[in-house]
Length: 82
Length: 217
Image (tube, rainbow over all chains, first blue to last red):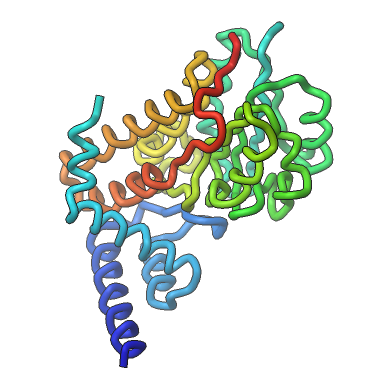
């Protein structure tokens, strides 16, 4: 049951990250992440859908940002700018 | 005695080309400050040549650009030039900045065990950046890529100014935060996705070993 829940959560997270990429990455942008060259918006979405190593890295990057934004970590850091 | 910076400049793909192009800004300032720059690029960017230079050139600062993993840093294509447990001893008692993915996770930790003055600055996450394909012929004019490379360049530039490794890290992280603030305020469609990657670099940037390490300029 727990495994099934995790799978469902993962699919939801994937959908969320894909929606962010789809809405926010313009066609002229490429992302360099890891040792896999650079990725277009479509390639990023494909990797996230597949959930391969690079897809997981993209998901982690987006999730870390969203969590840090939600828990106030980013706001706290921005306030500390010298 | 003049200080020497050893720098690797791979360009076997677009990603490494960007790393090397943005390193030009550091080299330019280093040379203006009369620091000798030993550049490893093209056919000289091999493991053999890297080891030879590290053994023979009396340098206290090594700036590595290139693809990386938790245990390796690469030169051109798939050739690793620095491998944990194999030739990382060559970086003992030096300050190393590795603009490479993930190398802080294990390789950096291995390096700083080799001497109490040793310092490793790098990333325990992937070093991420976005770039605009309209500027691939002239990366230095790519304003999107600049948001990522300007803060990372502050690490070697601060070290070359005589700042400590922790001061260099702080200046770089401060610049990353300023850029996050800037892109969020601009409210462009891509603001949050660019900010995500800037925050990733902020979160993953680490200083290991001697946090007070600096060059005696």
